Image (cartoon, rainbow, N blue to C red; front, side, top):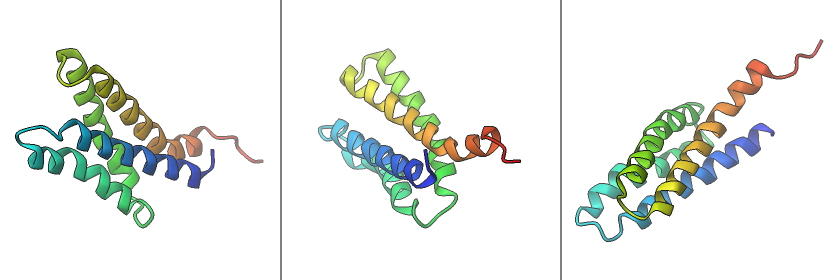
Length: 112
């Protein structure tokens, strides 16, 4: 996987998470606060991705929290189970895409 492809995948996953949170909290009493806490960070990171080298790192860090939230919601039976499964999947996608360049640099084929 090339670097632009990994970065594009990361942007797609972040936008997917933002859309997921916008949908999941659209009927919530505190929808504005939920959108600010959950939907805004992935949107900002996706927007910063083309210009920032640190955005991928912070996306990976925040994805650990999103993964934990998805597991907690799936375990407690909060909103629909398929939304929790999608949240877990997208957060793992973010972690993988954010880590791919570093893993490739560390374990990639050495040229001699």
